[in-house]
Each structure stands twice: as C-alpha cells, then as structure tokens.
Length: 617
Image (cartoon, rainbow, N blue to C red; front, side, top):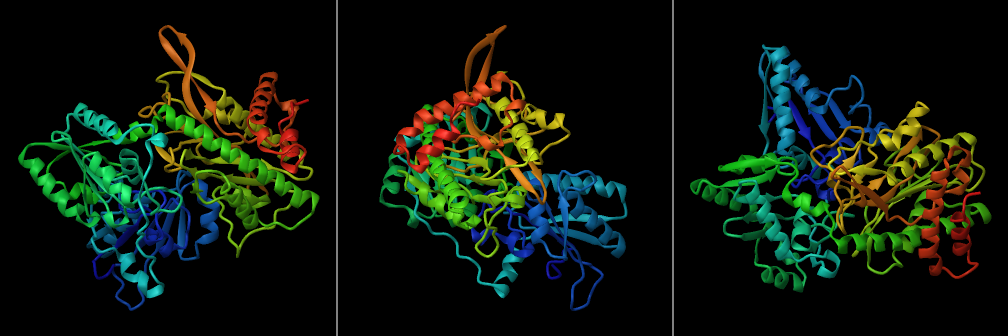
C-alpha cells in the first residue's frame, strides 16, 4: 500500500466476472482475512503518517446476516466485523470512505482508496464514488480519491505465505439440446433482438453463467458451478459472436458445436486488447454497447472508449431466468432423483443414529449423502457445500463442517441438512430438519411456524406484474415476535448456478424483476436460536399460470418440485389449519406416489417414507 501511495485498499470477494462463488486462485479476500464465507468485502487501511517498519492501520470485514456467526468465529482480533444491514452499522463503502477522510484530515494530504478494477463491478465503483462525494461534503478539508490498482496487492504477497492455487484448466463440454431445450442460434437471435430493442449495437457478456447458458456449454472451473472462464462480445449489426476462452480446454465436439453456430473463438487472455479495439471501432461508427453494471467490472467500463448503456439485468440474464418447458421438466426430474437420494439418506441416518446408536459426525453424514446422490443417473456433482449441522451448528446459516471441526450428530437435537446437486437435467437445492428423539415443545412450535410460512408461500396465488415481498412466509413468525436474517427465495439455474438472478424474494419488493411463468426459485423460511438450534425448510418451485383472471388481470401460482417429506415429529398439528393439513397430505401423497416404487417393500427406506408421508391424524 505504501509503494502504491494508498491509504485504504479494498479486497472484494469476486473474480473478474463478479462471480458469487470463485475458484481457489481468486479467493483473495478469504486468504487475507481468514473468513471463508462466499459473500464479503475486506477493507485495509494504512496510517499515512506512520513511517515505521511495522505499518499501522486497521482492517474491517463486511458481510451479511447469513455469515455473522461464521465471521465472528473465523476473524481474529485484527479485524472489525461490519454486520451489513444492521442498525447503525455503516456500509463497507461508507466505512472505507470515512477511514480515508480521517486519514486525510489527520495528514492534510490527499488519501487514495485503491482497488483492483477487474474485481469490482461498475455498480460498486459507482457506490464508492457517490459515498466519497457525500462524505467529503461533510468534511470539506478532506481530499479522497478512488484509484484503480492494476497489480493486485494480495497477489503480490500471497506467494510469500503459501503456494497460490493454480488457474483452473478443466474441460469444457457441450450441453445437449435435449437438456437445454433450445439451440444456440435461437438464443443468440433473442439476445440480438433485445440489444436492438435497447437501441444498442452490441453487448458484452461477462457473467460466466450467462456465457454458458447462451452457448449451451458447461465447464467446471469453479467448484459446484458448471461454468468456465470466458467472455462474449456480440456485434448485433454484424450478428457476429466472439467467445473468449481457452480452447485447449474444449473437448472434441465443442469446436464443431461453436463452428456450427457461427461463434468465433479467441484466447481468453486476448479479451482486454480485443475489447479496446472493438470499442474503438464502435466509437468510429457511432455505435453503443449494452452492459450490466452489476456484472461488468469497473475495468471493462474504463476500457470502453465508445458510448455504452448500462442495464440491469441484461437481456441474457432475463432470458436465462425464464426456464423453457424442457428445463422445467428437467428441474422436476432432477428433484425427483434428489428426493430419492435424500429419503434414503434420512432413513439411513435415523437407523444409524437412533436405532443402532452409532456415532455419526456431520462430515460422515455429508459423505454418505454424496454417495447416495452419485448413484443417480446423470449426476455431475454438488451444487454447493453441504450444510450438515447438528444442534447449535444449525443456527450458523452457512455452516461448513470439516473433518477437523465437526460435531457428532446428537439424536436429541435438531439435525439440519441444506444441500443440492448438479444433474444434466437441472440444479437442486433442498433443506430439511429432522429429529431422531423427542423434540422440545419450543422446537416443535418454531418448526411449525416455519412450515406454515413455507406452505403459505408455496400455495400463494398472485396477480401478474405484482412486486412480491416474502412477508407471506414470515407472517407466522412475526405474529410471535420472531424473524430470520436472510431472504426467503433466490433464483435457481438449469444445470447452472444454484443462486441465479435477477429474481428472488426478500423483505423488500423487487419491482424491476417481477416473477413470471417459468421462473424457478427457492422457498426457504427459517428460524434460528444461536447456540441452540437452527430451523430451515426449503423447497424449490416454479411460477406458472393459475388459470384465474380478474378484470383482465391474470393470476400466477407456484408448483413445488421438491420431493422430500417434512418431519412429522416436529409438526404441531394443533397449530395447523384444515387447509394447511390438506396441503401437507396432498404433498406427501405425491411424494409417496412418485418415490415409493423406488424402494423394496418393508426395507428401511420404504418404511421411513411410508411413515413420513402418512396422512396427518
């Protein structure tokens, strides 16, 4: 920082494609802070008046409510935790700017805030810039400037402490159209049409899942996400598409597939030079680019020297989010397979822990579930780190057990399993809580409140073009003065990222991204008692027309595709309405009908499924 004349340095979590989950080589924030969660920003400051050999400064880590407990456990005494969204807690942007202002006031000098421009979105750049403008108005004597730092400072020191992970060079494969449901040429035509509708002449696609979806390709450069390092530039007028990727990673059909679809291929490393050339050509022709300020890096915008229009989400993200009929059928089949594996798993775990009284730890349970999933046809891998959590660990929303630090599953406590898989047909994400002994009344009642919220959202009918919040899923907890600190719903990819934009349901409405038929999303209310237990019930569902119409306005509804029963031991039937009981019974009948034939009669799995799907009494 001293060499670069910086007072503040920002270390984002993302890679240059603004990915939520990143490859080990891009886990700079985790390396510098010790915090391993997927979301967060590290900010390091340097006292510009300190000239000693040992630098003086401070460090802060900002993250959201999913990771407060984990961050508290993982950060050492050098770090301040900024709990984003909490009352009186500054955003990381304002915290960084205020630190820079104080350094400037103390030193009487200009203080620079530095960041690798490839690793921060233009949207985040804009937020920091506005924070500088707002905060320096309050301290007019302060001088603060945001500057790009091309040589990443974490990369410069990382090799001194440990071996830096290699850049992934995994194989890229074609996703057959029988799984994708639509050809590449048809997708490209839709994107070009959307670009022209926005009065633009080209588009830069930098989000990895958007590239994979558009070209019907899948990779494995990032664990759990079937994507590969790449960019795409489309010239809408020329109808030319150029993929920037490492063609050494192509398996033999990929080159033919791209050639057949008129997609040119250039080296991944050449993207920046090519972007400069293409944007210069666009400027000369008075053309403009369309790009997403959330997924396009600050460096992409800096490199462009032609007119560009920012939109969020991009046409590609919108098209990808609405699943076609093949993708929806794939989601159903993937969740049927996953439901079979999960039913086998819970039956096995109950037999081991409760009946045989075997000692099974959280990691061993995770490994068993992976083994059962891998028996299913077209299984590719997991869709995220399995959250296998007994008792108090369930209250850590994104808990990750390791062999070195995990608990033995206690049959007298709630066991929470949040897990998912990647199949060629689709991506899954399911959370269930079970109890192998006698739960407390408090546990039963709180589980039932969460279940009621899950049912309320899953059975909701709503007018089209209605900005929804997740109030319907929180209402029963709210009536008891309770709540949970995460969103209720996120979009889900089709054999792509388990977290997919632009849709989702949270406490605030998302009027720019309304739910439409074909959207696939989660339904996951929860409740957490820190140090005691965690409860979360997650289904996956898609939006479809309900058949109802009022005054010309059509109504939509959800169809649940998850096929795993709820835990009978944890349901307080006295808290359920007649309609809720009927909903549960209908859901369980569907599971029994679709899965019972997978198990031999009177086996452990068959008996478990029969018991758990029996009608409520």
